[in-house]
Length: 499
Length: 112
Image (cartoon, rainbow over all chains, first blue to last red; front, side, top):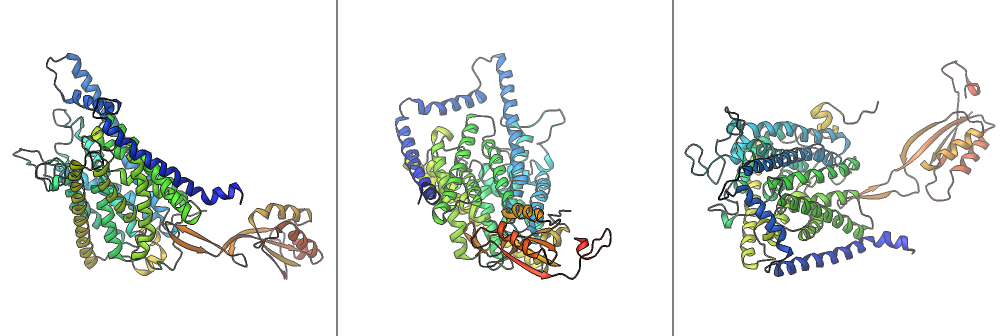
């Protein structure tokens, strides 16, 4: 066997060796830095810099300097610019990102139906968000008579964009450093992609009409309350008064976006049943080039998703972007590397799926962990999601067509739990189990409780909604329509016409 | 007249086409086909799900020639399309009743 053959066969093993060296290094070094970090040193520099920057935004100096107002205004402009950009990046994740990632994985007769789900949801969920979704998620002011805050669901404070749009006197309501409008638009993009992720589970067989009703109800009854619980001082928000088990850290949506959509996807796959011909017919992805490019777009869009969740152009945003990038990288290498070892060939779908798994896993942790743990989290997600999509799915026999549960449910859960392990005080103000065992154990408990509550809530609500829809309008297209393909049956179009 | 259908490997097309043109063959039809013979297919794996792909993609060229020319055409295809490994393809020869050029209405070998 010459050197070239040897590398082709054993390249995966080399990757593992590199990975193990990296793992040991990345775990050992931060601990060392952490212990020496008690003494003033370089490792605390970034944190204190971020702290002083945040302090200068909010702090009111004893003697007001006339230049301070101009500086504050300039900073706000910067924050707003980054957040508007982030909002656009997150929309870009749904289409073309997810639309291409998902549609490449189905058979050619269903390519449009998947793209339609993504594009139509950009419209549908935005309308819901504008009318009542944003208000049910983020409405409510503590100690207010008119719109009192409660920890379970948002109030009607922002209904129909009241108190969000520019007021009659020309001033824009603010949410921290950015206009409420910017915050609303940014969060609205999450409201689009979360239900779009679920579509992966019932692709190639669900009625379009049933999907529309299901996701309007799901968005209103599952996403909005969950979003309020985690991100608007609700029952799962860390630091909120009365939060269950102390609440959880969720920087950009491990629970709200990925666990909720992933678990709901699993319930969908179980209730709707397998595609006709599952296991016997050729169900290979019809266009892997779409899928690879879509994964690349998701990766880029995720910078807006995670770094944008810092809600400003801060050092934490920079840290979130870096850990997001690192985790995706490690996920791609881990998944494709494992395939390389197991079957002798690293696949494009493996690298693309691994990157997405890494992105999912780092999402809840992105504003709380340092770069080296991000590499560990990404690699762990690549391996865990690979196992879930291949072994677990095959063993349990459900047909989650595009692995919405295997990637988002499993990766999101792993990320939410590992946030409790790897969170670092320097980045987000809280130490996880690795750096502060007693306090970290408390945090980890909060993370696990939040995961359990999210899983239970999303699964039960999805189950009830689907049962009602199944009994009334039906969930699935007819057998004949499923064989013809949803493009023709549901939309009267074909994806590929080469005249 | 004879019709020759040859199933060949994709990358041999240019060689076959060039050699046939030199032997006075002025036209041919080429299509993408899939099929199987002794060459086994392959397996593909997508997120751990394995698919056996037993229909292998090949090219089919169709050529019509006079009876006298048959031997030369077949030899040319054999010579240029052969690699010696399983999967080189096959040549099928059939008798052809007629050929008509649509533009002029000519029949038989005149139409080739």
